Length: 273
Ligand SMILES: [Zn+2]
Image 1: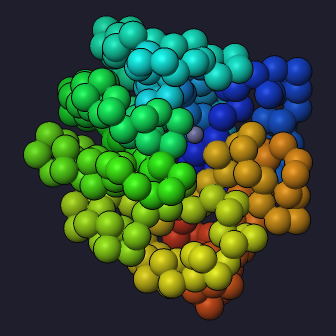
Image 2: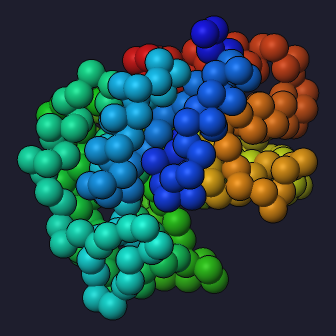
Image 3: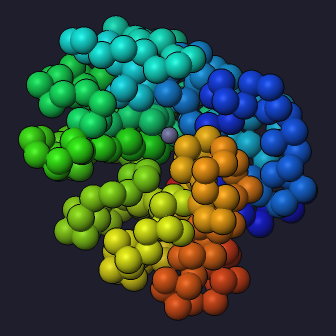
């Protein structure tokens, strides 16, 4: 197949696709859409690698999501298991696989976890930065602030660690930080990515999308979450990433084909695919 679009952050490894996973991969191939399947824990990281071997238009990222780290009183999400600390050797074996193109998603989540769990989240994050350094593959960052924006800031916490610890590049997925924080990521060579949210919340993202250089951004779905317009309310699937590309083009007032080509290049550059 000829891959013309790439969804840089998708979860066809999650239980929401258990019944029709193969059909969704086929639909994406028919639509010329490739995707990176991102792990959130041991089980779905392993599956992401298996899927990447099964499908030529799929690659894997392996790691431990901060919401799946066992901290204080948090509960596992549906289909997920909590992990007490980062199982370095387990993830290293997956990370060394030829179809694994990065480490994550990892970072800080103060939306689902209280920020008094910072130390535990930090330990797991720093271990994943070390693994990324060891295998020489980029980081896929998950950074989420509390609902009211109070307390610790996930973007600042990650930036501070990356500046001193990371020897690899990476991406701040589902970007929802400030323009100033975006600049601090660009300054260390990190990209940011936009999801389907920009298709229905254009006003909130207009300035940031205009500001972000075209060669420093990616389009993603984070499927099964947040389907872009006009599919809102449905389960998101990677082929819907075309709507995100399209919206970036219109918000930046650039030709759609130019955006498509550059976003494909950006993914290829960062993830070596
Ligand atoms: Zn994700």
